[in-house]
Length: 324
Image 1 (tube, rainbow, N blue to C red):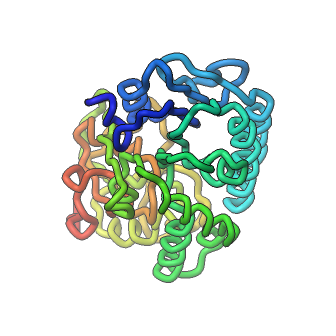
Image 2: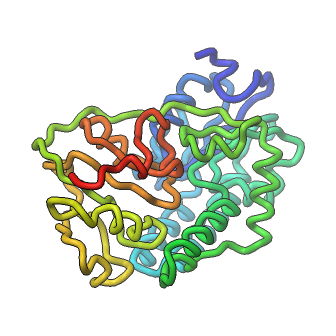
């Protein structure tokens, strides 16, 4: 990979990378593209802790107290309704981003920023007079709303499908900033497709294949929440010869799977044992790590384009056999 072309077009100016969680795809890109004079800023608890902030090469880990508050808040709302969790995340993203904005090298003419910080760096004035690329960690807020509304119309009544909608001003600001970005950087095929003129699509990193007990069982990754479209999984699994393996919490109610034989299972080192296929009809998936692990182990994946994988790596839901 040519270092000068690794993130967007050639940039002569000093670059500040203002990042959040490490994704292996982004870590590889930064390791290849970053120059000695460039700056890398990330949160951290008095250094590169926890490991989710451990980027390759020298980095400035700032905003320790804001990072602590963020992690405590995330722990506090871990079991709260989705709307409460998302509002808490946005609030603490804003606090962290504003601290990081003050640490950006004044000589930096170009930024590579985590999507989580984007509107808040703009609010702090850090984007003024600079070009920028965005490393995407999720669908844009406007697209999340659209897809959840579409799922709600298809799936019917649910207590969870509309439990979060971002403020309309924030949605509009993010959309405007993404349109201004020089490059939208992502390994996610669905997100890249939204930005055909700007997208720089990376290749997903597959983990090493984990050993698993062979088998032909079908699994649904869960949790059982409307945005994961368990209604579609339930319909497709109705004629299975063996119970559908279901992972995750039953957020739509303990009786959701009544009428369909299921086996509850928890994720662990051997979670793929006996599984030959995964049903993944989710309305949106930001980071399909479980699917990548399944593919590496030779498991067939049936999914929607919103899963983010290369279309060559999964089969559409309509190809799912009537019985297995």
